[in-house]
Image (cartoon, rainbow over all chains, first blue to last red; front, side, top):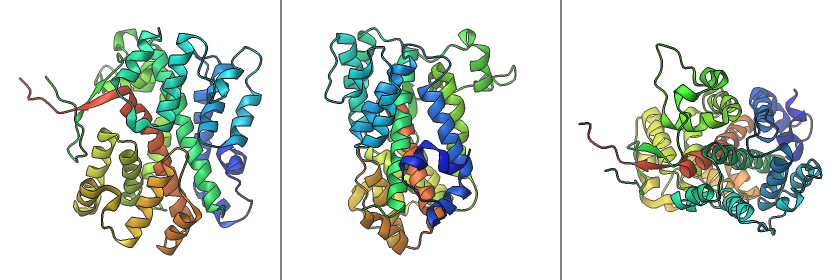
Length: 161
Length: 195
């Protein structure tokens, strides 16, 4: 895959043939691996407690928390009609105790990881989430934190204010 | 007893998981493959055993991590460590900060920069190039990113070319990922004396 076709580069607004595109060519392997990571985290074969539609909704929520609305909209389009769409709205706190625990964890880990403490993990466990799903959830949040910063950085490289 | 480490240090703590690590005897073939477990190599860290619960993510992240931190050309290894360290300080990942401060000190054969950062944080007195690198990575690591066109201009003024800037973005961003695993899924604890 050409680096220009990857999600990070498309949403980072990099123009073909500029100095930024040349640097991306040098790191084409990293951009390709970043795209592979997106597939592993958002559309894995083993989904655990997080079907692809739900992952798309959480990805949209996290993109919105990072004020990346174009990427949030792209994730939202993949949600489907399994009832997960409300989770994509950062203003939606969840309607069941399980969803509320999940969403407050997502928001805190995405936006203020420095404040995460052991109680945040035990709250998820108390909501009935198994340890393997807790790891899956952290990977979703953590991968997006990475990809969204690559996007923000590329946009600045391209001359955005 | 072990005590949770709360201050930045170059002394790498132990990592105590908050969730149960995968038990090797319960691992699938795919998990064993990702862990590179062989009859002669059965030592796997708790951190990797925790991440092995999501083996598809683990398999893609390890080569990506190595490429971003170690691929040749572009930003020097020591300066990539500054990106990793700046992010780990924003996210207060004591464990990651220790590992990457120690690597920076070893690569540069100097503790001056990491001492200054651990003593005074963002107010540390840094040489101009390190200042631009640290500030950009620090601001990129906020949610949402607070890095600006001025921060980007400071990198160029400090002499970084496009590949070096891209490498800095990648190393700082990568620790946005790593910190949200290491700092969220476990505690850094002081090593206890072996019996």
